[in-house]
Image (cartoon, rainbow, N blue to C red; front, side, top):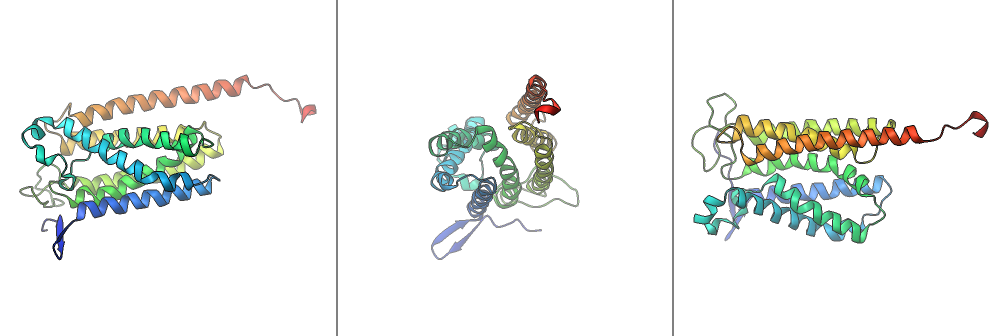
Length: 265
């Protein structure tokens, strides 16, 4: 297969497919989160006036973390720092930029939504958006493939020689599977009255496990202790501890509730 075109011309303008893919992904995330807010009885006006700022925070954070993680390259190529259409947006950096921005704006414009509930509502949105983003982002950018491969599923990517592991396609499938699991877990948590905040913890745990394996087997050189791998390990451990503490505290609170005698009902 020929490399997927990373840009095309519309008259004198150069349109980057990577940017179009990100725009579509962001719009999908906005509409899906808006729908989940409405379905749970929350106002959406705060999201409508905050979303562009959240996206800006995500992009800035994603680029800063990527540049810092690859600082030796950008010191010698400072002009490349702003060229996000060549790729180079860290998922963890995007979260570090978007979450504080969104938390502040929610607090300012929608204080009636509990933080834990807001995070549970956004969890499936984030994972489904990542699934779409893998297809419409890295799959359509320069150097978007993984390690070289001679396997039948190898693809050619712009800026890379030979056939490469189509990591974006594999990650899209992983994220979509996690999205379906989260929908099932959400239903289960609601039926069994799980504590608020459980779904976002499950999402972080489920997403970070394949994030580590993807980096280790398909992307990172050297194999171990790449920055993404380290972040993934930290997040897996932190998510597991968070869920254990959350459910333990929930069980303790239920045990402390006074029993209601039949005559009192």
